[in-house]
Image 1 (tube, rainbow, N blue to C red):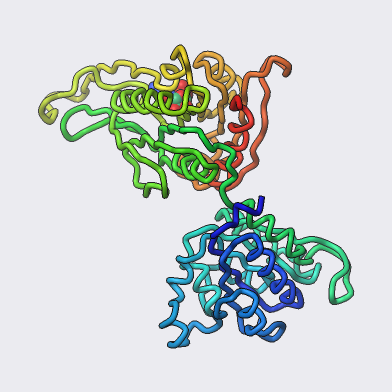
Image 2: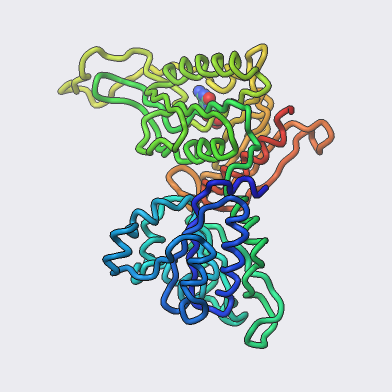
Length: 416
Ligand code: C5P
């Protein structure tokens, strides 16, 4: 499992607390697993352990000051933040958690945190009463909602004499959790094709019918599939999202474009890796209908016309057409429902011949469409299960976290 840390750049943030001594052991474990480690310390951390110790163990100069011209010349704080594949703050004190949750950047560690674009994690360590305090718990929830992983804390006897939750996890546990953040290999050898975003159906050269889909879920899934070792092609409708690293992107506009691109990419993928290792994931909110005619010129409003009739024709069902194929790939669909969520999801699962369907309740304002969070129920055919359908609930979490959980479910259902 630790091979996943090989050549990974880990930025370790050490904050003030008695558990800071465990950082020394953690650095050794991370380096033993092949990671390259740089350390940034707060002023309080230096009261507990010296930069020299951590420098010797990490093999790199330790970063302490935001305003040190010599250190900035060697590796500026923005450069350091960008260097990190994973930024882990361990131990993370209550004060540091509060500053991270609030976006305060008043020292080198918190400034790097804001500037870091890679994965982020915190390993809290504090007195059990400080851990239980409502303010600390709210800060934790804020960090979790931003897809920041929280490692521990463990519970037991504390340095202050109390017993309870708040102990920093052991170095090996922390190193294992760091490894878990990276590519799992769950989808290696597969080619995953994902549709995402809305489609736009032209009425005339300047107008179209569309919907509010942001594309975030599809993009998060693309990222999670790459992380799991898949080759990924993302067929995206018009969205304002950057292409995730190592993802091949095909931009489309209408449902008919999306259908043509999906069929072509799926065929290429099947030819390359075989249908059993090809996965089609339909997250796109495809417009159900398109105007029967696209006016060649802008439709003008007539002086006497209070109404305008537009004839719409049904768009093809992209996911169903892929699932119809004789040597069909593994097919996963999504359903956004406002009511009778389970009934509609199960109907789509059967009618569209899907292998898996993830469903969310878009009547909830806190999840879905434009939101960064999601909560889902996933269904799949299972002859042994009640009503021949198995299900699992994914609790509300950031879309990347949900995407990783979906990848795990998907990988478990792919035939080896
Ligand atoms: O029928 P409904 O639109 O609710 O089904 C949702 C699922 O079907 C999603 O996975 C969506 O991407 C897919 N779909 C499609 N082509 C359509 C309509 C929906 O691929 N024309």
